[in-house]
Amino acid sequence: MGWFKRLKDGIQTATRNKKEAPEGLWYKCKRCKETSTMKELKENFLKCPQCNYHVRIGSHDYFDLVFDGNYEELYPDLISRDILKFSDLKPYPVRLEEAKKKTGLNEALTVAKGKVNRRPLVICAMDFTFIGGSMGSVMGEKISLAIDHCLETKIPLMIISKTGGARMMEGAYSLMQMAKTSAKLTRLAKARIPFFSFLTDPTTGGVTASFAMLGDINFAEPEALIGFAGPRVIKETIKKDLPEGFQTSEFLLEHGFLDFIVDRKDLKERVSDMLTFFDN
Amino acid sequence: MVFLDFEKPLEKLYEQLEKIQQVDEEGIVDMSATIKELETKIRNTRKEIYNNLSGWQKVQLSRHPERPYTYYYIEQMCRKFVELHGDRFVADDKAIVGGLGNLDGQSVVILGHQKGVNTKMRQYRNFGMANPEGYRKALRLMKLAERFNYPVICLIDTPGAFPGLEAEERGQAEAIARNLFEMAQLKVPIVCVVIGEGASGGAIGIGLGDRVFMLENTWYSVISPESCSSILWHSWDYKEQAAEALKLTADDMFANGMIDEIIKEPLGGAHNAPEEMAKALKRHIKKTIAELQEMDVEERIEARINKYATMGVYDVIPQEAVQEKEGK
Image (tube, rainbow over all chains, first blue to last red):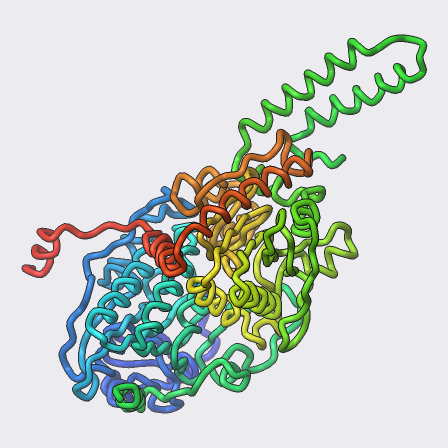
């Protein structure tokens, strides 16, 4: 006699709730749990074809969505250094190595220059998969260099934020990146070169409290989490449940902190429109 | 007197001293020699303790309940001070205070985080955690200073910007970001001093300046050691380790080039001789303002931005390695 006995025959889990699908073929929506093929997902601008959920995507996905074909990556060779010899449960260099391996990227921010309907644009885009898209010295320096490049070439700048905030493993260095990037942005403003801040899911902490809120135009993807403090911290502080829709793009639009919300399928056209407006 | 846990040896000595002083006052036995001896011992013990403070101990000191706060320094440093209230939009924040001061004949705008001096006031001051109105009030005062060409002094002492519901609704992030942007281009000199806790965005929201100082026993970092422990160690118990790992002391911050100077505190901390502390602070601020006023406006703004632009340490992948990777 066996130790276990099957009480009910057949597979009980509904197909729609079935986990695990071969990588690269199928996409299972995090929100509606419906399954689509990767092909369908791509054709739908990387949004769930069933419920329009904007899947968290990477920097290069955004470059592909926005730029006309080719783009040139800038400053790809900057990498983080373990300045403070920081170690929590894992040493910082190990975290960095793991992130590099997992993402195939060198850092949480990638800068690229390309064209949007034939108009030039520099985009800095974050990868949440790289230590939560956190801002350390490299992110600050890359944005700073991108600003210099825009000042030199008079090309507009767009930053796509997708981040948990500052990178704790770099201590105050990461905090100072808020001051560094914001201070540098004032030069762009003085030179009248437009800066578009595009906030995606999630954008919180020190990034929101610096350049992400400083765009000439601030706009966001639908239903993105955007805030200063994270929802968990706020909940612990006020000891109450948070209202539905709190800290979403729609909430920020309603409270006056965003210019508009854009569906990913309209992103390129909207960016292109803005470039046209500011080209006069 | 409040003794922190690492000051326990001092507490015992003070108890002894008190008893002996009582005996002495009764006048039967002359204890003056013993008292002198004990006082020397207290001084030496204090020196010993204070020469070897850990990061966490400095965090504790920065939060010492008897430590002087912004109002105290303003009162000590300024011949006259008129507090100015309100952000002109929503409310008057109680955790950031400020106004017009007279610093030996020089009009200044002086502002800072204010913590409460007792339980009731601590609540009233929201423990020094400002809402967006606080940052917007600070900016309004700085703009006032700019209009009339007065230097700005910012005193930093906060466990963080308030993470509340209304704070988010009214744009905590935007308020801090806007201050960073405006402070970078402010036409008048800005001197910032961390007088207690310098936690994260809440601190830097009034902390971008031509010169940034820290009092000796203060800390400044991207996150408090407690929150860092909670997030990275998944437990509240590693605050000591987090305090060490974050390199948040004035010494570390100076060594890493993120502040311009450390202002020495009296032995035993600012609260042990607050008047002396306020005098030292005033001396530093006055000297610094005089230096900054010598500079041309545009030159000063450029130097300010360039100072922050160089903050950050990173590596560059050697070209051979890049080519090798591409070759594969």
